[in-house]
Image (cartoon, rainbow, N blue to C red):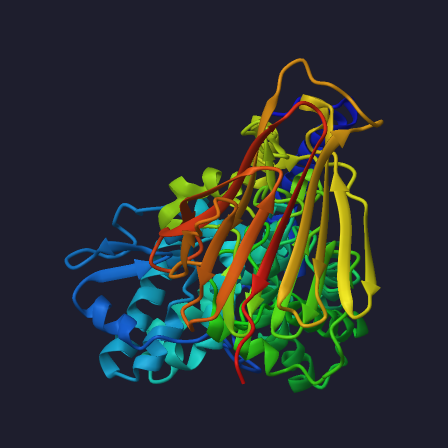
Length: 571
């Protein structure tokens, strides 16, 4: 666990004070003397209905019919009670229940019974939360925002052919939720939840009549938050590429709402969408999915495919993403993406991983080397292991991670979990030599504990069939001698389903991809071992896999050389 510097303690105090200030402002704004400024407390008319771009699963209704509510990777039995009365199996399940994103599944079922169930559950929720009081997770701003988007996007499901009483209950609740969100969005945790809260508030104000007067102010706040969270190259401040997909699935309908209301969208929105699309293409490997860095977990092929349809820029993909601090090497059939950055700011690092200088690599459409990735919400007990350096394709020194968890109750409450710190200095350079691409990088994540710097060189050949790596451990200011040797392990995690075995030569391993493509791994300066690995980022839960590990011990200066080389294919 990391000891906090004085400047970081000041930062935490500032964040806590800011949260208290925001809470106080929200309470005042939602009090009767001020609530009127947010417009009508009933949604008298929906002017436009935005499109829900998320993929729907009609089979969800089949499960609901037999009393099963499967959300966020967990199932709750609600065959003889309301789903709002069951004990939530997880907080993520409860968030999804109250967010009503599952309405799209009931709409896709296209069954009268599914429509009636959707309407009854929305009306039940509205009756349970009638009035201006109440709290809990259901009223967290980002949950309220998700629910507003879901109810508005599926208003036809909820309101068409509804009786007068049900219609009034649901529309009244829509207005109350909108007014409450307008007052409370400031209470959202820093990061994606706050941006979602402002995004949904702006979308609701564009869609519901009587709230046009608030659009300009909300638009200004939204643009400021968008600029704060989305980096110049299109990456998110938390460095999780998966967040971009979730954001774009809401930003694209928002952009369409401006057009439908004959209003000019803020120019920052179009520029940000373009940058985010470029970043999503940058972070894709050969299988079409996003690389597993800093909280990226179970892939959403449908979501990614949906947003990429809006990409109309066929330009070349650069080698560097300097703001997000990722590097990409692409030659022949091979794509390699490397994490060459320090963790995000403390308030955005609750999901960040200790994977500095780790990389992933695909060959053609097949994944070969992968980080463990983040587990789904149903496997949250694996979260700590997935964040550790040992779950990434990089060097682990002294069986310790290169980053440290910051265990500080106030900070964890503010950001939603323990953030990480270190490394602080991650210099790198990228060069081209006769068609090959080379990265030279280092990080200081082990300086405070061992006084050592990890240097890494990766060189991908012009054909893409050979990857040379050099991992070097050295003192910060030159040669040093530790009091005792420190063990190290360089991990190379293989994607599940890949076969790997040791050659007759103990320093060589043979790797066979599912397609039959064969690669040879050779090692100098350490002992080669083939060990079990765990791949966390799978929809079915953690999966067993294999990893090649280069093990040794350093006295203070060590160099390990390794090569992945693909067997030449016959034409």
